[in-house]
Image (cartoon, rainbow, N blue to C red; front, side):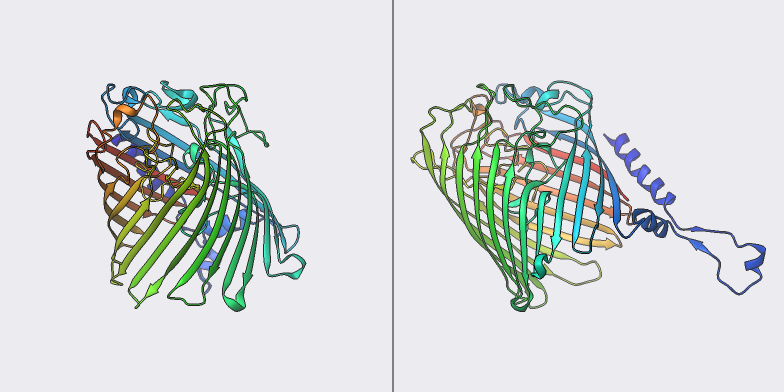
Length: 503
């Protein structure tokens, strides 16, 4: 991976040089005058190009990632302990995501937003999942309209904004609402939804009311560019999420006290399994109701904090170890809880040192009760604190990004040793709330001991650098030394190099 990483970073430096300021040589006329030398700047040119008229603005980005991991999804390199994923325990692939977006302004109050995206992948080792399983080479995935919405500001002169259509929605710190398409791996994030945002400035309050209608298949209501491999009645291929989803969110945020910003919310989510013949059908049939609250702020000039708690109830259909349903009449009552908190000390020195302590709790299902105690993170299935563990490593026991049955506690150090250069180092102890995994397949049960609660010791190091407003890059590493929750107790690792070009 090192040659590829070096080439990516070298390309970033080349791109940086290409967009540097360019001085136009002075002519004989202006050389003899007192006027300053004319300077043409790329950023001025780009601004004019991206905003050709008052009615149009556009842009784009191109992201290149080289990702490598070992045991992150298989949990072990031994096929005896990981018969489903063990042969593909080591993975390396390139991801090439390109996006182009545009906003049209027919009036001052109305905006039409459009964004197109595509992400082909080059597998250097046999692929570990989806329709490209056990293949190498270029996987030419489909392109998609990943934003398409109409936004209306101050309708009927009210202090509100209405946005209808495909849009990105991120509430709070994204704990429960941040990504509507977890199965495509940060290719897209959108939710097909209607959002009404009311800002009551007099009482420093914002109210969001959101209705969601999300389909698992990428081409369910809007065609993709190229086949997405998700034909109804056949095994599901490249999905956006695991089931069709409907939902409603009421989120109220008050900032009357700067030291104590308060959020309260209610979230309803209705899941419907995909209609495929067994064993290709999967996903949940469920009705989930979540009440929660969050408080955050800056205290005593140096302490930044956030604390969030949520309680869930409802019902979820029972599934067997093959992910096919025992009986459509069997549902379990949901009784689950979760906490997410972080305390940060800001040194406010020349290096912008920050030291944080995080604690997160997500309840797991107790197999000895008739209820379902697993907390569902709803639309929070994205890499909130790990690109490896809470995404890939949960596949054998729940689903991609379906973090649950967890205690996470540990410190993070952030520092900016030079301008545009950021470094962070995190360590967490990871524990299971229940010794028995919340969900397991018949193919993955061998990976767990069922009598240990230590998931492992987790270490993360990230180095980021922003060359200029057009080019940025990072080097990302994660490691987990498995504990007695797992049978084989090997080390997991994840390495990534990224270059992002934005225009």
